[in-house]
Image (cartoon, rainbow, N blue to C red; front, side, top):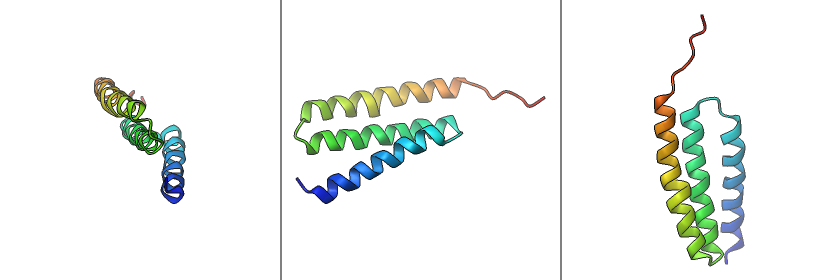
Length: 81
């Protein structure tokens, strides 16, 4: 394993985690969460846990992201009246 690659992926993972909880826009949070799941899948594959990486990519970055985007698209903003 290349430790520089793993360290860079870990830094991106931490940045995505912090960004996902601090961003105010819901759609942006969903996209950042999808990136987080994709980076986790890459890290799992790098650790030779291919079955876990495949599941993370399919469920975390795939199905969950589609469901979150569907939910966000059905929500409306409250007016500031």
